[in-house]
Length: 256
Image (cartoon, rainbow, N blue to C red):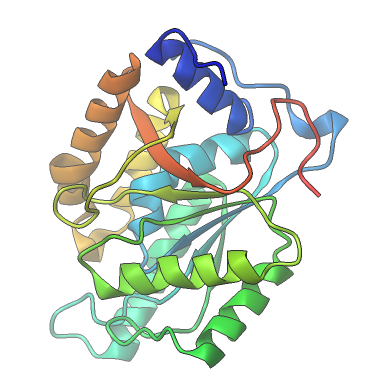
């Protein structure tokens, strides 16, 4: 097995695997999907704002390339607003998630579990696998399973179970959120330069007003983007840990 001669060579290969999103801050994105069908890009997160935090720039990049990007929220964040009932909080956070998705150019789907009471039972795993299979994913991004939040753990494990049971294995990448505080022991294998999409991602997070999206950006997201960018020599990056089959090089057909 040969290894790249430098970290920059490594990240260039990694980014090529992620639909050819440019390794350099000033590199234009790969050609659009006009020569091949659009990919179904799925991101799974436990609560509204989790996918945006760890994967927002990458999802925006896929959407800009003409791919069909979808966020599956396991819950509607029902317990995320002090003093509000579950129903009131769900309505507020659903609207915020829908606005964030419009900004990123992605589609929201809600899996029907309850914030703070998520389940990893057999029936729930079967239900979620069917939901994910119906999306016909070409690539899936999911929360890192080693996380301090039980809902994050459940979201990750539901995706992993669906991946293991899938008739057609899709490439699976885990993303980080609030590393060192929530995501623990995260070990990146792939990076995406999100420098040119940083403001769009920030705007999506600011849509989560009930969660103080400005504080999320300032205290967590900017630090992660800066650090991951420093690792690979760009201004801002999102990092992922790959499991299973990688995507083909830019311009190639989706797997399957």
